[in-house]
Image 1 (tube, rainbow, N blue to C red):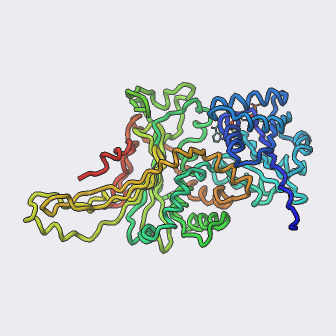
Image 2 (image 1 turned 90 degrees about the vertical axis):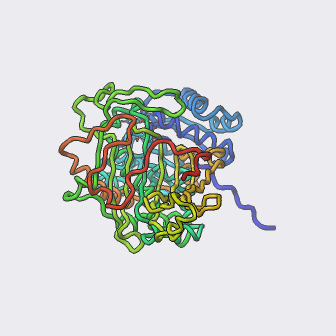
Length: 512
Ligand code: NDP
């Protein structure tokens, strides 16, 4: 008879910053759902750690409210198991205090730093000094660092050094929740599992790439954080650089976390961003002024104040609410293909997408057949209208723009859009945090950011911040497309920014 293998010990998830918004709104509802769905072990242990004087019962009450409010209701079996195994430990972030976590973390353990970013380094150091980073008897220890990873190249370097003083790189899981999104993984599969896609994914077929994260939302109460950060630090340096790296990287030979990360680092290393000399053209910043925005699901556009008039924002703030960068990649695949990245608040739509503009087909001989259908507009595909689009928001959709013959006797052409919307993605509805928590416990690092990757992204973005130390962002009206890019941002012949307004519905997808 084969010897029976004992089940692995249950993981312990220590959440430092357990009284915070992230824990209540996102983390705990995600853990609860994963346990309910059998994707995390039923005997997973939660240990809350914070300064607040709470009993375990009071801590559990907060978590239960979080699940009821943000997690779609309580699963009785999962809740009974989680609450039976949960504990709350009170303390600050000194080694003496965090040592109280030792009796709770004798098995495999995650230390999730759901703390203000200035505390990531000190908390990591305190845990290591208390001996909690040491892996013994096969029990792994993992450290989760939330965003943002530094506020500049220098501070990111300092944070990296602080983390690695007490932890090995393989133990550190840096969160970028964009990587947990279904479409980002779908992008990898779409690219790498389809021969026709990989065949056009290069400078012979692609003229430019536009990566957009536009939102109609304003500050939504996050002013304290946002006014320190601005659009470049909040979105571009992390989330959009990740989308860029996944789009531009070379195909990995195996589907394995470390290989994926190495390929992303490789392409980031080959990437040039703005410099002190060209930042006036390659780096664009803006700040919204009063206007009207149409929020999804609301019947009418609403009037909104300008950023400087928002409650609590200092009227002389220099913070940008829109940032755009031009990047170029010096490798065989992408030489000569500019990548344009932009993100902004209070724009005229809610859109996150990666759009690749196809080079035009050779001039069509059909246009010499005007006698068949005089007056037909056969000039298709030569005006920058052909794109491959991977949309993450508002729906998870892949679009390929193509040319087809218009039905009828004449030889008239029309543009069509081949659209695939992943309805399953919406139905499955696992959040990015759910995906990342499963990978974290499984030890799969592919969707987490490696330290050198974060630092490369900072290297590319920092010259924009340096250039922006002086002057003011360009004003743009709330509800608009954002500021006009300067001459030279887009090379002649390339399409300008695609509209951020909602895409046409499937019924309207056939356009002439
Ligand atoms: P909160 O301010 O709501 O919570 C922060 C937590 O840290 C609280 O539990 C707080 O305890 C604790 N804390 C603050 N100062 C100290 C200290 N000196 N010693 C020990 N504990 C301390 O922040 P969030 O939950 O919103 O964010 C946490 C992290 O997650 C941040 O890095 C943020 O950037 C990131 N994040 C948050 C998102 C969100 O939607 N909330 C989304 C994406 C990332 P106390 O309540 O007692 O002060």
